[in-house]
Length: 407
Image (cartoon, rainbow, N blue to C red):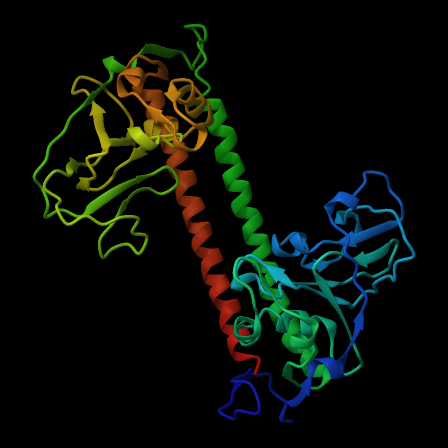
């Protein structure tokens, strides 16, 4: 690739291409294909030979480059005008500006079913000057998203019309350069997809291991996984130390654990000027918000302070424990289900009594096995974290290409 400062060509360009890009209205480069107000209510389980595309499946990412018709829902035919391979389908309604004009493209080697476009969709069939894959990729560029923000309308639901899109002026190169641009973007996209599947596999492995390690069963003493069974009050003690306003504010979150809440984080959920009554939180402490219990306890690996609404507790001095094992146990499905039995209140605002928690019987292995389990889960967490970082870097590369290979 070469870098260009000419505004009539993109910043990044493949070697050997020197022609200026042509500017044309999208409506002059495409044919509009009819779509129908078909909703999920029309879907049936019977194979009818007719399938359809719903805008919701585009937004969720289920439909991107459609290479397998079998993933599409079945509907009864009603003399619908069918789509063809190469058609680009755009969702014309979204709950936020980010989703305006999300798109998918039909990439089929052979069409085995009749496919039609459903509710809240606009279909473009590119002519010989515009490759469908190039248009599909163009709909994901920051240039196009900015256009969507500008012309999209609505308050609770944002929409974009065919007239908005057909009047949009896009710049495009000749077909051979379009193919190269789309190919490199598609390669990076496929790599991201593969890495995401790898991440999903890691998460699935961890979930299955969690179900094995934390199923609260009692087994024979001769079994390797013999578990102790004692009340929580024999393991944990609550405490409350106040008067540390100079420390960073922490907040409990089931998904993120303990996170910094001042300048170190942008996810500030609340602010409070008087921090004198905030409670000290130290590494290896557990935290739960009793009045808005959301299904689990948070574990802290930092020193800071938490709102007075949180209960802070830790292991008693005479208890041998592995912090990773217990952090994961308190996030496990079986433990969450156990906790839900002692919560009270409405579904979205459930509370928990800490004394009820202390009365629960908890099962766990000896410290040697805790250490082994903790070590396995810790290594998995490292792999999951590394995998997320790989995906993040690849997505940054893709975003860079989308910003610099289009104008």
